Structure formats: C-alpha cells, structure tokens
Length: 377
Image 1 (cartoon, rainbow, N blue to C red):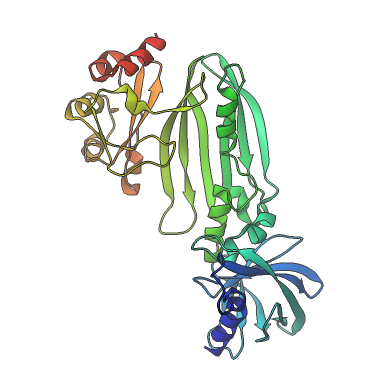
Image 2 (image 1 turned 45 degrees about the vertical axis):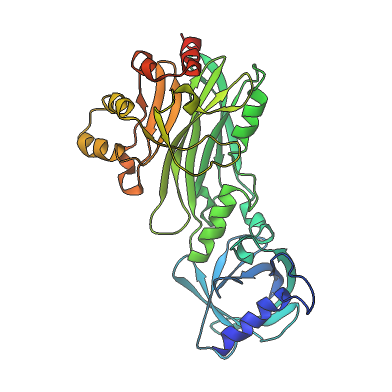
C-alpha cells in the first residue's frame, strides 16, 4: 500500500491549489521522457484507477502498466492487451515534483526510466490517459478513400475511413459521403457529413472510444456507415447504422434516420409532418438544435405501421416489443415516411425500416406533412 500512496502523491501533487487560491479547472499530467534510449509517453489514471499506459513515440503501440500492490515502491507489470504480460516491470522511485525516475526490468536486463511531467487539462470524469496530449499521437495514420456512387441516378461521393493497423486501430471503419454541391444547402450538409469521419483527436468519437478502451486492454472498435436512402433535388434522408465496442458488457448497436432539406441545409424534424396527438414525446427537452425524441405512436398510427412490419420468423416477438414504447425514429422515402422502432440491445436484431405508403399515412399528416408528400409526387 505504501507504493500506491507514493504514486498518488506523485500524480496528485500538481492538482492541489495553494491556500487562498480559487480552485482551477481540473489539471493533470502526462509524462514524457526516455526508457533507455527510447523516447516514450506515459500516463497514469489520476482520477479512478491507479494503473497507467505508455508507448514508444516511434512505434505508438500502447502497453498497460498494472500496479502491484505488494511492492514497497511504485512497481508496475507491463501488459499487452488484457492479460498478456510481457515479462517486463517498471520500478519507480518515490520521488516528487515534475520528474519521475526508475528502472525497467526484464529478466537480467535493466534500463533507466527518466520522465518529465507535461501539464494537461483533464476531461470531465476522465484521466490524463484520455487527453489529447496522450491520445492524439496514437490516432494518426488512418486513411479516407473515396469513390463515385449513385442513388436512383443521382451521383455522390462515398467516403470510407480505415484506421491504421497499428495497435488494432483497423477496427475503426467509418463510412460517410459527400453530395455534389448543386443545391444551396449542400455545403452545410457536406460539413455535417464530413464531421462524421475521425479527425485524429481525442475529442472525436474514435478518440473517446480509444480513451475508454485502452485502460481495459483493448483498442475498441467502431464500424458505422452513413448512406443516403433518399436523394432528390429537395430532400436527403441519411441512414446512420453500425456498432461500437469501447469496453463494457457488450457492443452497442444503432440504426437511425436523419432528413435534410437541401434548400436550407438544415436537419428537418419529421414530427412536424404529423397532426397533434399522432406522436407521443418524451418529457425531457432535446439537445439544442435537435428534434424532440419520439416516445411512441398513437394507437391508430401504431396499428398502421406495424401492419407493414416484414414477415419473418420472429415477427410476433418483434411486434410485441415494438409496441412497448421504446421510441421511434422517422425518416423519409419517396413512397412514404419511414418508421424505425428503437429496441434494447437484446432485441436489436428486430430493427426494421417500415415504410408507410402515402395513401395510408395521409390521415395522420399535418399540412406540412401533406406538402412533403406533394413534393415527392
């Protein structure tokens, strides 16, 4: 336990404000220096874990540093992945200030460790191992490939990001697309679509997933695609579907629809297409600029939609869960609105896009919804 107390003192010393000073934003430290002649970067879990991570600045393949509680001074077992011990150990001197020194040992080999603190601002509820200063060097090296594609004769450019093979980051496969900028709102839509691709920083979804995953011994993975399902001179419907695993009990799966107006470049709220009382909403407020989440459908609309649920072996079970109010996504197809029931993880395989033909949807539509229908005829 003395080792843990010494490590805590090393990492937290810079966080305590002097007497009389106001508390500053959460500050932490990563460590840069050498292991023998090799330049390295290291971090320790300052908030919620005692373990750490480090990587060679050249190879950029992170290794875990798992604290040994029985040691008289800060000592760590070097581990690759979840449980593969490399046979090496770190032994740090219980020093103080902005330097750490110690010895890396593997068998009969011993090389010195010399590290200097680099101040970083901690993310909310996170550690120094989740900061840009530590993660950004790991995130570089992915590639984006493009190829021409078309939907119903309208051309666009498909974009596909592939993470680098280094450290398992090839598990990040993220697709988006770009419109040919022919309409006034296309530039704004393209900016939104481009933002879906990793930008090589810890603030991006890929960076956040990597930061959450590394302390558990994995690199995480995200496989997702944004593709057009309706592309006209006025409307664009985007399907965003895929899965992500950033640690935890199981991967998360998702399938959503977003509708854009190509005239304005703005995201459209499909709820405005339906008469009052046809849709049921959650009581909380949405994020600024986001549509109000749909909790359920009126009984009449629910019957009309579920009557068109595809014929499949588990149809009865899926229909029962779809009617239990887990929420709905609504999109737009040429033939009518698309409804996507939102299922919990255990039932995600039930997910379907259900198209309600305009003739069946018309009794539920608002004047705005009727105008949308007319624009597609």
